[in-house]
Length: 119
Image 1 (cartoon, one colour):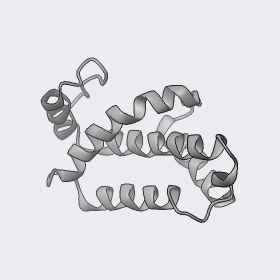
Image 2: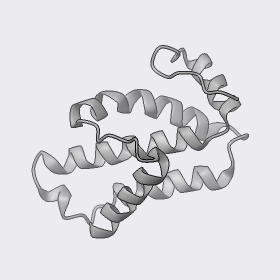
Image 3: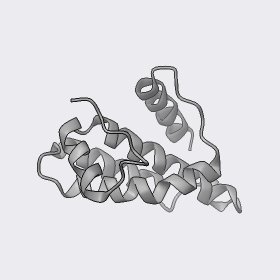
């Protein structure tokens, strides 16, 4: 649990460059299905580097591992996993090749939810 918190803080500071605001739990929960659609589409694409795909799968495996003290706290545990999953998916999408991400955003019709990235 402590290790996961340190990894999350390091990840957020690196990705957000100090601009990251902690999302509300409900905001993260509402964003998860859209992120999941786009991330799954990117995971299937051969143009996304294999190390990025492996990193996402490994990070999600760590988050969803059954050995976790926070998961035993009612209400808080599941929301922690959802919030952390949102951060993992957002990081994956932000680091995937911009042209590939834009292609999938258009193909999935997510232009209103995701701004197209500059190439």
